[in-house]
Length: 149
Image 1 (cartoon, rainbow, N blue to C red):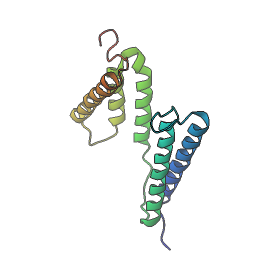
Image 2 (image 1 turned 135 degrees about the vertical axis):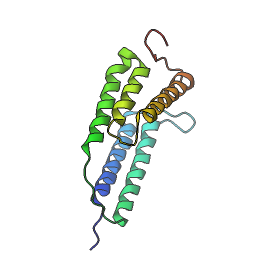
Image 3 (image 1 turned 90 degrees about the vertical axis):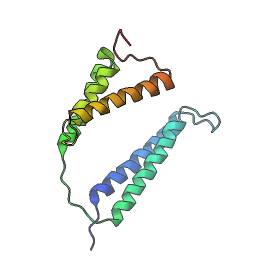
Image 4 (image 1 turned 90 degrees about the horizontal axis):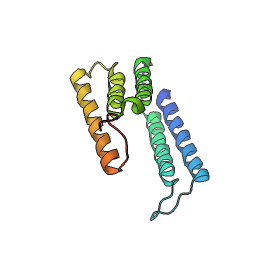
């Protein structure tokens, strides 16, 4: 009997459950609108559908591939959560520049392939993308450095 990849099956099933939950929550709490004038519930509903399809794809693929023995590496998970917490704590006080740099450097810390130079390039690229998308594209008012930009 062939062993299935249970971690991917569980992960895909969780994605499906989350996607279905998001879809039905957005249906019940927000107005969807139409394709011409989308309401506030359209984006979460479509996101729920995409998450469900992605989870179904992961689950189906896991049923047909060979079981891989894996170990749980908790260091990167802790680093990502710590990076998000650092971002949340610094975004208002120190601005988006410091918050994005803190997020990237803390999250990249356990990865041996990311040296200081690569991490710096990634942080600068994310700052530029944030400026282009949020400041220029969406005209959101947020400060890169409080009191300066």
